[in-house]
Image (cartoon, rainbow, N blue to C red; front, side, top):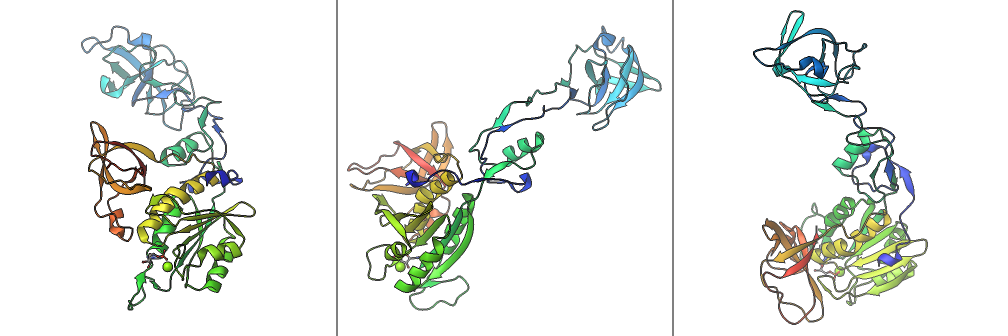
Length: 391
Ligand code: AMP
Ligand code: MG
């Protein structure tokens, strides 16, 4: 499926204030030193270290207050021998000074500052460029912008990082039975939970959700919905993709010009998953309708596609964990078992959340990861090492 993603979408400048979750299209090289200047780590006095030689509580050094350097307002003049400049945390160390004495080691008395400690050159000075130097590559293309990345971009004066355009996603739930949360229940009605879970997952993976539609189990309506949805970078249908008489999604996708790449995966939940490509680089997914199947297949198939379209790495979310309970294997299908993760001295412990039916959406509550239990005959035993895909 990832081989069908022809690369990241084009880059665009993004206001850093709106950058949360976006993916960098290029490496970011700093044009500024951080910190920009030698500055004080403490509130106190900028001094010449040699002027404090031998200073103790009993025999303090006496310096003359001769200026001030405040955060944002450096001292205008340089510091001379025998002088002390008041300095605040983060303020520029004045020329002529080579150390800072903390305010708690001093007493100010009129036009005298008594210094009770000897300081060596460099004491409580943070050096220019200690964090980042001009020319450093601070962030790599493909990085997802989180709080730390945004802060670092701001700290080097990048106001509009180049990010991949966000993939557009159109979501269609199919089924005559579906009801919005606000509609009155009727016999045989099923609440359309996928219309909430799938857009949420898409947004969390950086997508721009352009439409969320509901479509009846009717060939013509499904075809028309497929025509609209395949305009987006990714069209996601849920339900109607299996072998029932009322499952029209595969035909609708073909009629809308999507070419089948696969139908059916050796996975529980998720067996009838369908994937196709659309001329011009679009991707089309037919996910099973059961609420857990839709969520699981979105996470395992659509989310990596969304990441790839943004140029981000696609294996970000896999951790190794230890299985807490025995899980029977299926002979021919891998299973994605919803698990809570807890930290132990041996690493992550993955505990299944309870009944794992594909209609039991509450099995997603409290789940941190999908434990991947490979096909086989012997049960996966408690204590076995497994891979878990973080939610
Ligand atoms: P289908 O894949 O269309 O055969 O649907 C399988 C099961 O999932 C049925 O019980 C459907 O009622 C249910 N289902 C289908 N779509 C949704 C949806 N959008 N939200 C909640 N349940 C759904
Ligand atoms: Mg259906």
